[in-house]
Image 1 (cartoon, rainbow, N blue to C red):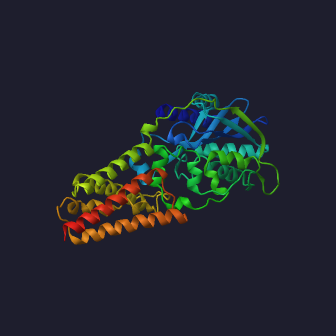
Image 2: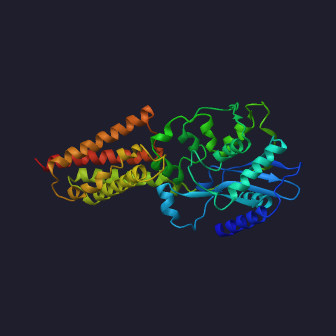
Image 3: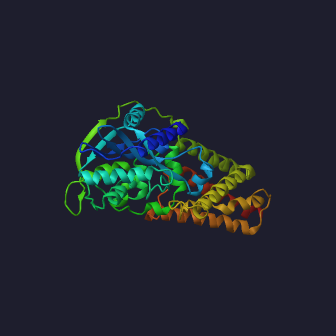
Length: 389
């Protein structure tokens, strides 16, 4: 599918660059806003430019990427993934999102003939093979943020953004999570992988990384110099049709993590009753938390992702745990290992404090596991103290 889209984009580009690209006086340029879809990468919507004239009707959008590109997954993980600006026929573009049952809205821009031509020329130049690729950033350089940036760069006019009536101050994490089900693996993964940097309040302009805010802000925006409204016509092209969405709670992160946590607590209880220690559960816990901690450290220090920095999930997913497995499997661990366990408990307390004062918001579904982890650490301290008497 990606290859087909790429081929179409190249074909349309070739056709355009070989023609006279002068727009007629009937041309209109609008911003298309697509509602959320079912997949995680579609959960935040999409934005694009529509250029409609007597002999063309095209959509230019900056949200394209190629799964078949060399080193796609490694570049994505490292934050070095290039997106590109693609071109689609409007009917194909629209029908694709109607099939996905995603809302489509259109805002016709209030531009004069010169400004329309400037914007169209800018888009055509960006669509050339040597210009179309850009380094993607989810918050600051995506399909939505490109909309305002391109209008201002192409026309040389500054857009004056006014806060919508329903505007409220939110953090980047809150803005992301309002598009997700809190008890979904996508929501859990985002809260796990992204650090405290996204818990800062987003300014009004920074909220424009989400397409729906491009739409709501543009509805009240004007050109700063002239005071002329930015949008002259706002139309709902397609409304998402209500459908019953089934969800399996038994496969949700809350249920699975809760079951794992109950098992940990139950094993700890029976260990206590029998004055023993089930080493295998401790090996699994230290291995799991250690591996997750290493991954989070790599996301923080070994990638270009800005949103993965200062991630205090490391307070429970402690990377050094993986190096402590040697002590865990011993019948009588070293005395210093008990101090290490106390240190882990302190880290969990610090995590709770961070959460309480708002340094970082963590996934709610983690609560049962954090409780179970605390109980297991307390028991290990107790049993190791008893064994070393």
